[in-house]
Length: 114
Length: 112
Image (cartoon, rainbow over all chains, first blue to last red; front, side, top):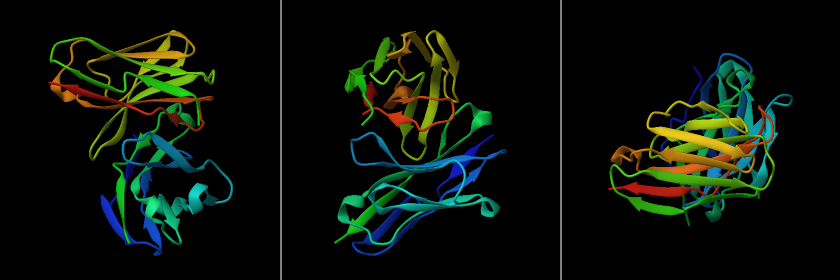
């Protein structure tokens, strides 16, 4: 069965500092990986996705993620955090063998200090 | 933003009553999904649809049923609501079987 672990429930970061959110997945075939962001009271917005090709993926809002097959990881990074990045971030895994049924991690809530 | 609406956006109901949530899309996407979101669990798939009248169960389908009579509408029904079904419910759509899913704004359901 596929699964996703986001080890950090909360992260606090100062504005302007770098941010890295961890995501580890378990999937029996080639995974399709996603990062979504959810602002308070809102739905989920896609930040970026990895299907194949270059393992370093660029997304919206200055985010990037790196797929490391050997480590079963898909960590999300941003070089310089803005106050508007305060939100909850979800990693998800899916794939062709799962019929595009996504499995989500528990989420990481990011707080940004001024 | 993908054209997805959910109704109602908020609902309070009592244990034992039936509840129906509606998801409506204007994108003509084939696939539609219902998730529930609970703290610490992320989103969990309840049911999904891969075409009109074609639906299947997700990982937390007990106590829920769905129907899809038109491409644009996907209904989630709680036949007899329980307090454990208090949650935020999200609808999502995708064009293809392996594709990005786009999410609606959510429905906050409280079962007293």
